[in-house]
Amino acid sequence: MKHFINLKDIPAKDLRKILVDAKNRKKKRQKLNTLEVDKGSPLEGKLLIQMFEKSSLRTRLSFYLAIKQLGGGTLTLRSNELHLGEGGETLEDTAKILSTYGDGFILRTDNDNKIENFKDYLSIPIINGLSPSSHPTQVLSDIFTIEEIKKKPISKLNITWIGDSNNVLNSLIAASVKFNFKLNIGCPKNYVPNKLVLDWVKKNKRKIHIFHNVREASINADVILSDKVISLNDKVNKKIKISQFKNFRITQKLISHAKKDCIFLHCLPRGSEVEERVFFSKQSKVWQQALNRIHVQKSILLYCFGKLR
Image (cartoon, rainbow, N blue to C red; front, side):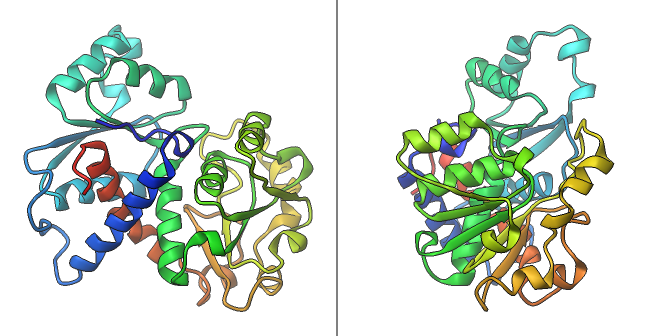
């Protein structure tokens, strides 16, 4: 049994193994319909329980299809439907019930400590479906998409992030250390990555490059990634934050400073941080990026269930 909470805590060889398996599984599904089960039904009889404290579309759907295609089933819970918290049941008791009824647990939460606390009490694997500091399943899938399109290891590519220093960027930074690729970050001065994240990078003898000028950040980029500037539960003055990011918009002019075959990725949902000319351009691979989450999620599940070969 293995958990999947933060990329920085997972060995690089295991992350690479997940990507290789996902590539093989995607190839073998080319002639199968959406709900047809993979050969061998590797997770037949397994139940994956999902709990979302925050809105979810892609993560919820991709894991639903992932476990179905592996031969298992899924049950989605809403936190306000449980006795957990206001209902008076302890997290420990809830974790033990989840472990009794299910075989794996996905949690999307607004509290990093909650994932760690669940991990301490669960006897089944837990997967981080998004937390304030990390979005590991998203970023591993992004790496899969990048290597699929570019047809080379990400270690040979220049990756640029333009936007807020959020949970997705934290996982991207962790990935840059694990996969040894160059990462440029373009963000306003008040929105640089957390010091704990930067200290971890330094401890691992790696370096990321932070720019407060988007043109400099995007020069020679093979890939430009971004995310919504205003997240769903952002407790900030939205007008002020948007104004602070007005010079960090993904435009066609910005893309022109990157390599000619540069691609654009966005984890969605999008906001005003990217102009439609870019979002709907040939360089934009956001739909392929979203679809690939199913294939990578499947291999993550197999890793957590000890079934990855």
